[in-house]
Length: 133
Image 1 (cartoon, rainbow, N blue to C red):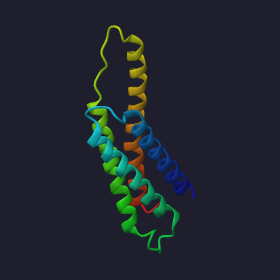
Image 2: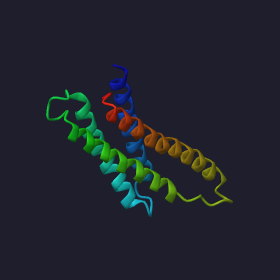
Image 3: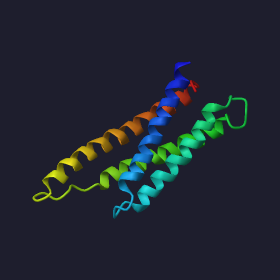
Image 4: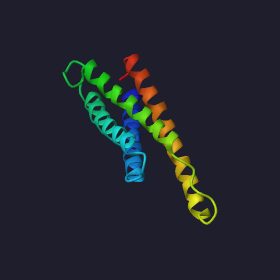
């Protein structure tokens, strides 16, 4: 019983990271294609994975193929999120010290979110492989 609940919580976590990333990075130069990949695969992955979790294994929506598609989308989401983190440049220093401090906090939250997403997707993949979900 704990595994399905944990899977639902991790699914919600990934969905929140995807949406917050979209809101925070929309319109920033140099992130458009990675952000689009991150958003689309994250939303599709969340939808497909949630359907997989909600239906019994002997039904079409709860089949192994649906779970694999959901996890595949989640892995693309996680990798695109790491690519977005790698492209995030340091802000300028000097007059913008307050902005710099806010940027540091934002970057730290992004690191936590995207590393957490990789860990969540890894946990979901292991749970799937062990037939716990």
